[in-house]
Image (cartoon, rainbow, N blue to C red; front, side, top):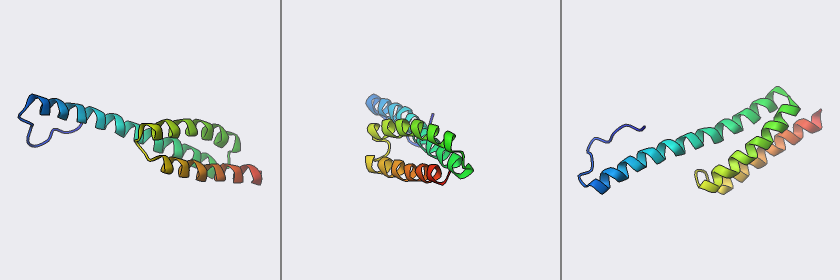
Length: 97
């Protein structure tokens, strides 16, 4: 979990809110990491010139990016922009082959 704050809340409701915030922050961090990893995998496959793997990873990445954008971890426009840019890279790779 996250590090404990310097001054703990006095009320029980405040202590509970702090516990919940730490748990939520850890979950959101893992989702952000998963999002970025999915994008990096596709970019790596494109850089390597592996069309088949790039296409397969792109399909997986789309579902991950959409689900995380729906949760509000990243803005929907950022998700759409990332998908669009990677789609163009994958298509360029397919056209070059």
